[in-house]
Structure formats: C-alpha cells, structure tokens
Length: 149
Image 1 (spheres, rainbow, N blue to C red):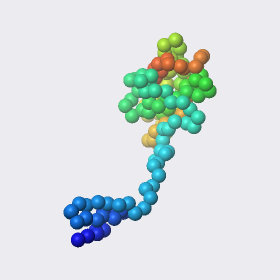
Image 2 (cartoon, one colour):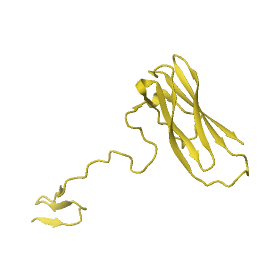
Image 3 (tube, one colour):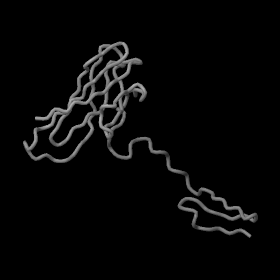
Image 4 (cartoon, rainbow, N blue to C red):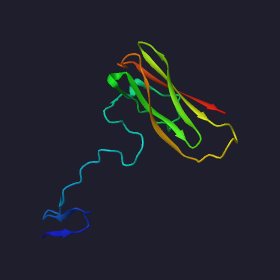
C-alpha cells in the first residue's frame, strides 16, 4: 500500500513505502544560500582583507562593539568600525606601532550632561588609519576612550 501525505512542508512530497518507511522527495529546486548580510550593518568592505580574530585584541571595547578588522592598500591601511550616534562622534589614531603590535585608540566624543536633547540611536561607521608599514602578522590592539563635555 502506498500513502502520500501533504504535510511534509512546502516544496516536498512525503510517501510511506510498503515497509512503513517514510521518505520525502524535494519537488522544487532549493533557494541559493544568502551571500550578503540579511540587514545593513557591519560587514567587510569590498576588496578588503580580513584580519584574523586571534590577531585582534579588543578587550577594552564594550561587548556589543563590532570586532571586525581588515586591511587595505597592501596592508598599510587598517580598517574597523567605530560608533556614531545622535550626539556623539568617533575618531581613531594609531598610538603605537612596533614589530609585534599596532595600538589604535578609538575616541568617542560625547556632549556634557544636560547640554542638549539627543536622539537615541547608534550606528557603526567604517573607520581607517594609516600604518607606517604593512600589518603582516602584528597584533592589533583596539582601545576605547570616551571623552565627555
């Protein structure tokens, strides 16, 4: 006896064989995998080379902060994300370069308390700094400083 059921889900047919085995057979071609972000947000810029996570020290950044770091221009430009919001901006500078590490300080400038009403939003903006020589296998240390007032 062969029984066909319509409860296998969209795009497939279920059947019970004489040995009481249930099988499903796709009836449509599966959709291709998603290759880009499902929504806008931090992503690796086109043409950039990602820096391996083990090469990035970002322990001073808040947990929600993106830790994506990349190089461009033959490794002499270091890219990452900084925060910007309704009343604050960010900038970055290289504070140290050695044969073993590059230290980048992200500075977030915020207004003083009660200085004005601010919309409550945060976005992550790509930022970059120039390096004296290509990054290579040096460690990237990201530091965050918040300046108020």
